[in-house]
Figure (spheres, helix red, strand yellow):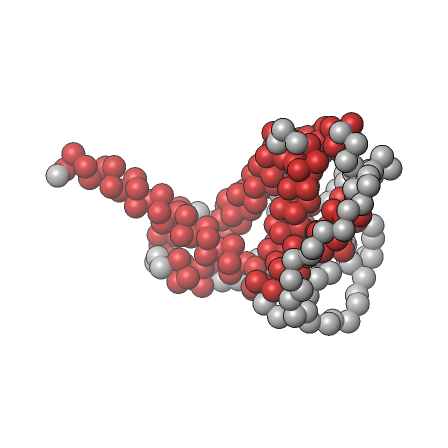
Amino acid sequence: MTDHLPHTLRSDARDNRERILDAARAVFATEGLDAPIREIARRAGVGPATLYRRFPTKEMLVTAAFGDQMRACQAIVDEGLADPDPWHGFCLVIEKFCELHARDRGLTAAFMSTFPHAMDFAAIRSYSLRSLAELVHFAKDAGRLRPDFVLDDVILVLMANSGIHAASPVARVAASQRFAAFAIQAFQASPVVSPLPPSPRLVPTASTPRRNPTGEAGEQSTAEHPVLGM
């Protein structure tokens, strides 16, 4: 029995870590980065002491939580690039980026402005952009992606996608999926009208200019947009 104890402890520790990170992402999504650590521990079903043993500082906890999102972004681009059909791979990237962005609710931008040195965002963005540019090149060569498409068009889509407001997270993701379908049809070299996903109930909100971390209205390009560096 004692022979299995170390393995069990390691397994329990891994489970605790995943529960804490899942709870952190959920709490940050609803309450922002200022959410109390005790609430994250309560949601994860662990004591504050257990949380602090795994993540001694809030920056370490937030960095670990967003590290998974960064890796998810890279995995999406890699999956699209690995698809034998470059147009299908391109569509997959647009769909999954929009969904990830809808779930993110601007938290990546907040993380980058709050903890700007926590991760090497420049290297992550550079990798994602190189891979995405390669996928775009293949999709154009296949004659499926319109020849005047540029990488900044992905940013246009994600900026528009960030303006979706819905009655619930589920409805927001559903609206994002419908919007992605519209965008993909517009990107085709020879547009084909296809059925769209169902339209969810949306919540109208007052239009406000997007702000950068300094508080001033500003533009973003592929060189600085956080979605390509998640």
